[in-house]
Length: 138
Ligand code: ATP
Image 1 (spheres, rainbow, N blue to C red):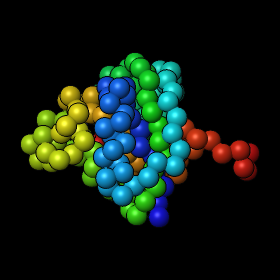
Image 2 (image 1 turned 45 degrees about the vertical axis):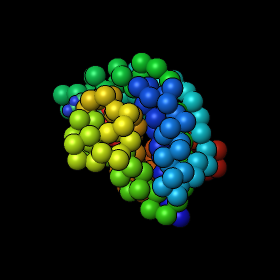
Image 3 (image 1 turned 45 degrees about the horizontal axis):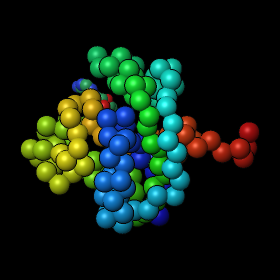
Image 4 (image 1 turned 180 degrees about the horizontal axis):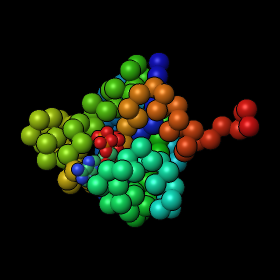
């Protein structure tokens, strides 16, 4: 089984129950959870790979605008199952192309799109460490 990061963005933090219900319906379980608020620089660190993108400032601003909920979720193919459950990045595209997805149901647009999922197992390990740092080996 895989462990991966499911990060609930500030736009839907009040609908966390619906998101968790979808996670369990997809045969994934939540093994860690933390509600926190990212500073501008923490959000910028988390999304460092996007620093040259035109939407970077909006993204960091949005991600530090309110509380987020970070969860470690676990299950078979958790990384790809969670990303599929989220649906396409742009919520409008999600409503068109993946009407059952979480972004189709709860997303607003291409920025306010409910959640983040790690792109790979390597990214999952790194991103889990960001929110749930281990003390082992330090
Ligand atoms: P994530 O990495 O958050 O799971 P993703 O892989 O679907 O999402 P990326 O292309 O990695 O999308 O972009 C990261 C995030 O940046 C998106 O989830 C979204 O919040 C924001 N974003 C991406 N493209 C745009 C855009 N064109 N305009 C505004 N915001 C965007």
